[in-house]
Length: 172
Image (cartoon, rainbow, N blue to C red; front, side, top):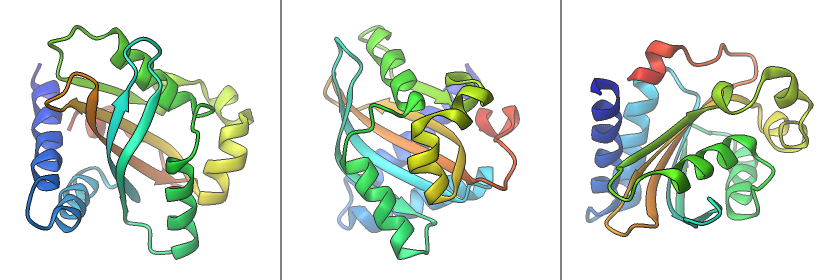
């Protein structure tokens, strides 16, 4: 329960930042702080629409921080703007959100929960998206916004040569 409340608090900070007078700057500051807490290399924030019947996720707005290479940052934004049905972690998060009670506030999944190592490293998604971007381990969390199907999401990512997120880091 404490872990869930902490995650809700962090995501609310991102949500409130998005509603500020300079939302992009504040969202990036909020995500940067979360990244610092868990030693993530790349962080994303997104406002998403989740189809309650299928769990499909469509991005409405997004920001990437921690990525200093412009080519990689654009590659990541292009990926987020396009179809990401091949990402088994997004699929797991969307599926979890679709199954939540209408009063539930949060959905969360780690890459290690969503897909085993062998399947991950052999997946088209890993080879065509993550590997070129230099990303591997990830944690996705989403907080229900004012609308039932709109969620504020946060993605935390580590580089391919970095260790996966620990349980303690995920619990932050």
